[in-house]
Image (cartoon, rainbow, N blue to C red; front, side, top):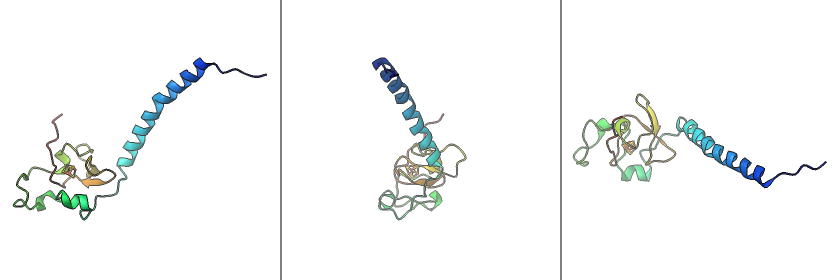
Length: 112
Ligand code: SF4
């Protein structure tokens, strides 16, 4: 006995699958953030943006916008939450940066 699949069932199934695929992608992104390799300070983009793993070692004379309170953990691009030692950065996709790091595109994280 053959079973007919209605066009309505196909459309309904597609809508359900379409709703779940972005959710699965979001979970994968969150899971991968913890295992990102650290950004190499010698990476050409990191060098161009003056990235350092320790913000206290920033050459303030060469970086006029730098303030001692600036570090990755309070930067708008830092993907971690308060207390995370390292996290992803929106500028350096696929790499993690230390909470105490810094680079020239630092921007104040909006207060919650
Ligand atoms: S953009 Fe922000 S979080 Fe990313 S490396 Fe620069 S200072 Fe750190």
